[in-house]
Amino acid sequence: MNATSPVSVTGTDAGATSRCAGWPRWFLPCLLTLTILECLPAFWCGKYLDDWQHVEILRGEFDVTGHESPLTEYFTFANGDPEQTLERIDQARLPWWTDQFLKLRFLRPLSVLTHQLDETLWPDSEWLKRAHSLTWYLLAIVAAACVYRELAAARPGTLTTAGVCLASVLFAIDDIHAMTLGWLANRNLLITATFVLLAFRLHIRWQIERNHWLGAAAALLFVIALLTGESAVAFGAFVFAWAVTLHPGTWRQRALSILPGLLIGVVWLACYRRFGFGAVASGQYINPVSEPFAFLLAAAHRLPQFLAALAGTSITELTSLAHAAKKIQLWWWAVGTIGLLSVTVVPLARRDRSLQFWGLATFLSLLPQCAATPVDRVLLLTTVASHGFIARLLELTWPLLKKRLASTASATTDLELQRVAGRRSSILLAWTLGTLQLTMPAVVLPLRLGGLCVLAERHVTAATSPAFDQPLAGRTVVLINPPNVFYSATLPLIREQRGLDNPVHVRALLTGLVSMRLERPDDRTLIVRPQADFLHRAFADVYRRDPFTVGWQRQLTGLQIEVREVDSTGNPQAIAFQFDVPLESASLLWLEWRDGRYVPASWPQIGETREVDAQVTADWFGIDAILESVGVRP
Image 1 (cartoon, rainbow, N blue to C red):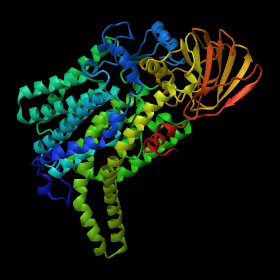
Image 2 (image 1 turned 180 degrees about the vertical axis):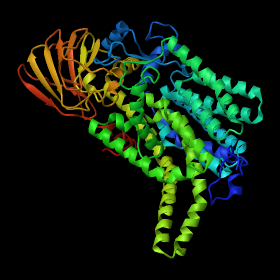
Image 3 (image 1 turned 135 degrees about the vertical axis):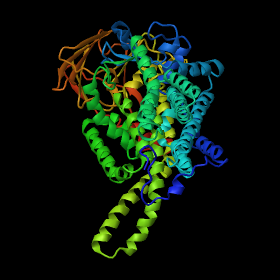
Image 4 (image 1 turned 60 degrees about the vertical axis):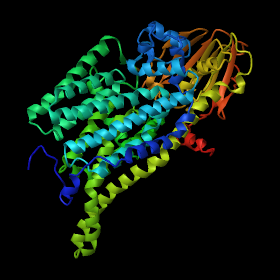
């Protein structure tokens, strides 16, 4: 048998697996209509997190780096300059524990242009902005469907017509895409996916037809994709997987097919780092080039979480929100899930080149994502490969499923019955996975979009709590326990863009995810003792990686912060907040989070303590928000 041709699994209909005539005329219109209906809740999502800052940048009201062009600063949250970072901390744009050398600076200029278009044509219409993002999602779906069809046509046996349609449907309605679609700031992922898939389709045709104009067009689209977002590096995963498993040429031709994309990627990375883009000093980002050992350790922890999410058995954000013990449980759950699925997948993949391609593309496209804390929204391109894998798996196991079900009755000995039962259970497992992937996302996608609407609205509710209905000019708002680190950052932005009075400063002590003890040694100092690790939950460690030491200090306007006790891992156990005025001063407005909004807070008298219970849980950001979106109050 030709080593470079797809290999069919024994027991499958070779003729059936080699036929792919594209899809019926009605398929794409029906698929896109279904997608629009599934995504309707996205139109009710308001601005969320970064969206509030992005509006200021586009309107020229906020400059992060000192550059005038939003093309470079739109996705800049800290630029590594200690002086500017401290200024942003003082403005409450970053939390007090932020590393002064933090850099979170990403280059996505072509994606920024689409947001500038929004601000020019329909600055006050959230619906049209959502429609713009949905348009890119629909384009990505069409591009993915075209890739499935191109592969099926170029290498018979990769997918049948039914497999192409199935993979396209699975991709279109995957609930993993909810945050990517519903959050405006994530539009870059949709745009990048579209250009990467178009580039890969042309790359396949170039290798089949040997038309160098097609190769040049694929290279150009890859360059455009890199200028829309960093996730474009997944193009290399698809190209490499194609070269290794499905490329029809010699090994020399396969190696040469990888070279153009590799050279473009190297030049892009060099320019990216030369001009100061990237992430430094963050607890959630690891540079694979400069920190290879740390990256490998992180990948061992993060890869199973990604794979479990792709299998539909987990949501990656749960890990970031959970406490340490829960994170370990979730990791073992992910490992167990992947191990169980491997029992079915590995024997089939050994004998089918198509499964090898989809599996390798899935794995390789996940590796760059392991440089950051797992979140579902970065998996858009990976799901193209994973759904191709699932569709092919179901194609291969359907004839086997019918045969095994029928053979149970004909088994005459206990040994034969055990062998048949074992094979049947593996095939049933594959079909259980496929059924869940086809049915559950269709229900969960609109629910998760509704949950995102609730999360966005909670920020507005918090910033407009009745506790703020009083003069704020010249005052400092002190938030004892905002739900997470982002609530204090969005508060002044929301109030300003809604035309409401703003305090001169906002100070957040910890977050509402942990209980704390408040101690007051004198009239101007409050010592906060967290009862759990608050730095490694709800994305708080985005802003810091290095552990704290006793005596660490940070000076802000009207406030000095000092870490007085740490545990063995460097997590603060006692933080002193010393104000320039007594805590009772009218210039300080003390608030705490309770029952879904800010309310006036009380502080202990000198020499006394006060216990503050945790006010939110990880579920509050997940399942509780989804339930609330359908009118159920947890």
